[in-house]
Image (cartoon, rainbow, N blue to C red):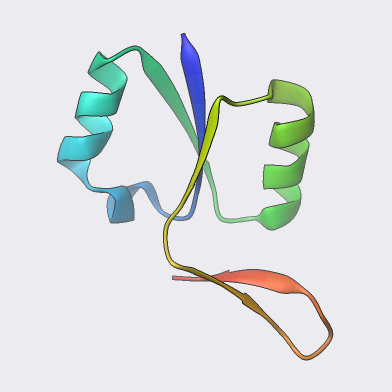
Length: 67
């Protein structure tokens, strides 16, 4: 089974699209936390990473996801 990491809210991806992705043999793991996303990338090696929302940078140079 292929793996997808969804960075953002799964509801933003859309229920219909999520269901179609699951039926095609993909598992979806979701997080809003960038640190957790990095751990997932390191240890789970997903096949795809999808982002919902906008990735922004703050005044300190830290990236964050704006819903």
